[in-house]
Length: 117
Length: 111
Image (cartoon, rainbow over all chains, first blue to last red; front, side, top):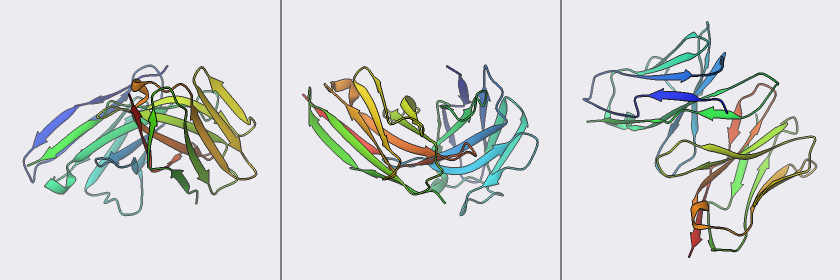
């Protein structure tokens, strides 16, 4: 199946700094990627939909200036957590769909566990 | 918009027994229903999916059934094994390709 790679897997940063997470589709082109946040023992919470070549679509309650998303190419989307605070500590997962053939399997990256001190 | 409800939140079964997890959805236009398995600290992995033109699909010990009239779909795992222990998520998808997720079910297989 298709492969989505996410980097870094783990990141620890100081409060007030910014952290960038990369999501790459390795063997297919993804015009759309999805960014999720997952708290312990909870479901996946969609944060935003990343669209190649245009602005991301953010879900209600997600601050677009806080979570900057850039989808500059058909294989790369980035999420930047700006001025991170301890409450931003979470598991962030990206996903993408290989749209050839219509709606189908959503492939996930490995996830990035962010800890803000 | 679409809303997906998943039950139960936790399910504990004896090894070798069957497990059933149920989901309901609200939008009759949804046409794709996947089930994902997520082990602790890992990414969700697709285990089975079904489209709206099919009522049932089976893959070895795993099966999914879909009732479009009632707008619910279920995951069935037979002959459960310890490695089946994980969190399972159902989802529903509209034609815009975005998945709406259930809250998840933690499946515990007791030895």
